[in-house]
Image (cartoon, rainbow, N blue to C red; front, side, top):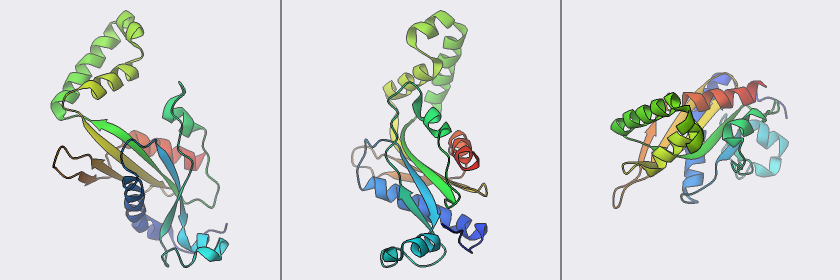
Length: 197
């Protein structure tokens, strides 16, 4: 697939729209979805390679998300290790990951930090209860003030990135959408690596 003549800055402007499209796509499938990875391909390149898609895709210099198979986190390796094994071909201008997470209020995050620090000091307890990451995950999932959320992080080869968080509403409250570049710096780094490898 040839690279589109559009400049990387054009794709940077198109990235937030692609991330919102991904979140809406997954939102329509409901909650309790596995992590999903998406290739971000210039729409013009995709139409040039597959002219039959021209009627179904918007024209212009946008990015089209292409869903990959759901990621399997079941093994001990986890999502980070799965991402370490991914390398995108040149025709892919970026990628995005959608993952359900647990969000804690600031006060609970302080409690979590204390629990993790205590576990790190007490190696025997940490070994008995699993790794520090497993302890943190259990703490977050069992906290009474936890909120379910879906995080979508998109990254381009030029380093631009976009993060969108949907926090699941409680009872009759609507979901809350938060868009901010600094929501998930570790995930941004991990996705950038898949584009550089």
